[in-house]
Length: 345
Ligand code: NAD
Ligand code: WQD
Image (cartoon, rainbow, N blue to C red):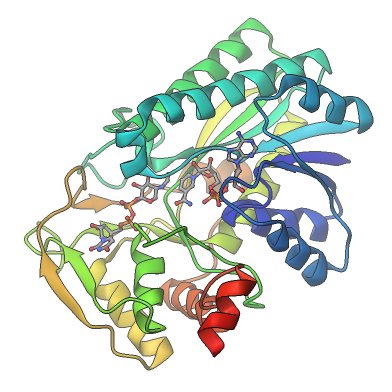
């Protein structure tokens, strides 16, 4: 069975490509490489020993997308492609609405034309907004607080309308919590552009000496130690969740949202301490102001995914830190060969 993976060269996409290949699927990747490098897919080929058919295409380009659908017998789509930086979305709302929403509309139009009605969509826990009602259930109120989160919410609504209009569609909305970690080979991982916004890549870059010190955003929350608590999930567990969701949608019709997290929350200080333990490196940090828009606590109720998808996360916080660290240490400058040379001089 052939699966189209949009955004398949990205962080979660590459890890999912590996799991798809391992599960016996044929894959076709479409990515415009706006936030990734072709080298990431080359590494997936090396890890799996399989070639990957990939197209450098913007999925807003309907004609190009149609060509791909006409050339391959695609039976389902996993849709990762999109922009994902919360802060940038506040600065560039039109770019975010245009890219995330228009590309999804174009994709769905082409899928409809080619009668491909199985879709796994990358949503986000960000659709719940800054709630402190934890654990978060799929039925919890949706109240995204930034343009990025609103694009995910709006797309979810579009997809619900699509299913209402034609019950042959089968769609899984996967709401990821905080994906971290990397493939255990250390060959692929998260490769943020510029200074990372997210905690784990920031800590990793401090550990490898690229950044001096971490600023902890607030230590006066009502949490175990005052710092923000999140549901970090290993990217390989997350990737495996996509395989389970795919199996489910192929067998059923309709639309369902699933939280993909571990169900456990860790504070910023607990993550620092786990990272220090596995790396043996002290992470210098200082306590700063709260970051606007941050919730104190955010972790998932994962019982729906467990029951319906027969999926649960297996890896713990130390595995997540260990694997993030292995990738960062092996490739301090990510996929950029040029920078690696500069670094090793
Ligand atoms: P990523 O940026 O690493 O991957 C996205 C990929 O999509 C990139 O390779 C990029 O080049 C590609 N892309 C972007 N716009 C495109 C377009 N118009 N046409 C073709 N390709 C395009 O991001 P990721 O972390 O792998 O996230 C994947 C998906 O999961 C995104 O939709 C993101 O919003 C969602 N998500 C991510 C997180 C997270 O923390 N990483 C959390 C929740 C949800
Ligand atoms: C985690 C914790 C920070 C950086 C984001 C998006 C969300 C989703 C996942 C896409 C918080 C603290 C962080 C730092 C810190 N992405 N922190 N110092 O904000 O939970 O979620 O990524 O869908 O939409 O908002 O993740 O990694 O930025 O923060 O103290 O330098 O670490 O305050 O408590 P977040 P994060």
